[in-house]
Image (cartoon, rainbow, N blue to C red):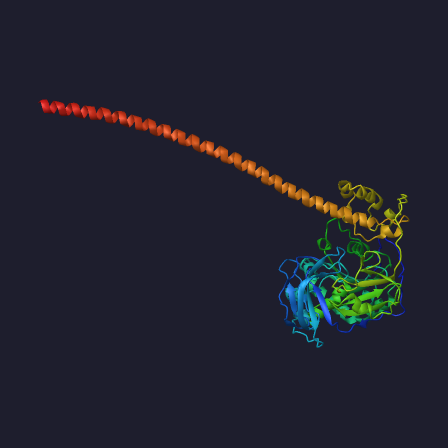
Length: 500
C-alpha cells in the first residue's frame, strides 16, 4: 500500500540528527509534581491528603466527567503538598498539583488487567482498564484513549500513528526501535477492542530501523506497515487519514464518523502495558534536543522536573533558550523546574539567540502554498490583524491546526500563528459574550412576558371577581326584596287572623 500524500506542508530535515537512537532510563526522581488539570476535561479531585503514604501506580486524583482520566502516583513515597504550582502550558498560569517525596523504594500497588490472554476479555472491560490506567494521546493532543475507543462501534480501519509530530523529535522512533513486540501486541489489543478489519502502522520513510524492527515482529496479516514521505505535518490525524485512505474528514467532523480510529504509537504501547502488563501510565519517553547539547531520549517518570532529564545530556555552558513540545508548535518556557506531564514529548535546549524582528507582509503567497489544510493564511492574517473575526470565520479560521508551516516559509518572519491563535481566542470570547447577551435578553424578554402575563391574568381575575360580585349583589338584592314582600304578607295574614 502506498501513501497518497497531501498537498502543502514543508519538508524539514532533522536539525539535530544522531547516529543511533537510544533510550536512557532516567534515575528515580527524588520528588514529583503531578498537575491535577488534564489536557481535556475538568480538574481532577485529590483522593489523598498531605502526609499520606502512596505506592507507585496508586490513583491519587480523579474526575467524574466524560473525559475522566485518573492521575497515578509515579513514585512511591509521601504526599508533601497539594497546592498551586507552575505547569508546562503556554498560558504560564499555575494549577493545583500534588507533590510526592520519594521513599527510594519504588514500591508498586497491585493493579488489574487482562494479562496475555486478552482475547478472552470483553471490549468494555478492556476499555475500563485503559481508562483506569490514565492513558491519553501521547503524541501531544492528550485526548483520552478510552473516549476514542468508546466511539469505535463501526470501525473498519485502525491507524497507528508512528510519525514524529515535528522535526527533531525522536521519542516515537526510539519506542518503535526498542519496543517493537509490545507495539505489535498493542495493535492487536486495539484490533480486538475496535473490531476493525485491518490496522495500518504509518511510519515516515526516514525511520528505516523502526520500520524493520516492527516488520520483524509483525506476524499478523491484518496489520500493515506503510511508509509515508517525511514531510511536516504528516502526523496530523486528518491529513494522515487522507494520505493513507483518501478519506476526507469534513470541517468539524471526526475520524470515527468515517469508521476510522487513530492512536499514537506511544499510546498503543501504553495500552499494551495497561492490558497485558497491568501497569498504569506513570512514565514516558522524552526527547531532549537542540544545538546546545547532544540529543538523547530519556524514559522518565511523570512529574519529574525538566532539569532532571536535561542534566542527563551533555549541555554546553552558554546561555540557553528552552522550548517544550517542538520547534514548530512548541511553547517557549522560562523555567526548567516545570514537571514532565503526559504530553511532554520533547524539550529543546538551544543557545540563546535574538529572534528576528517581523517585517511587513510582501504578499508573496508562500504561506498559502505551505498550508497543509488548504487555508489562505495571508487573508486570515489581514483580517486577524484588524480583528475582523467574522471575516476570519468566513475563511475557516477554526480549521487551522496551528502547525506553523506558514511561519516557517514567511520571508518577513511574521508570527502568523500567533495572530490566528489570538483570533481564535477573540472569537471564543465574542461567542461567550454573545451567549451571555442572548441569555440576558432571554431573561429580560421572559421577565417582560411574565409581567405582561401576570398583568393580564390579574386583569382577568379582577374582571371575573367583579362580575361574580355584581351577580351576587343582584341575587342578594332580589332575595331581600322577596323577603320583605313575604314578611309583609305574613304580617297582613297575621293581622287578619287577629281581627277575625
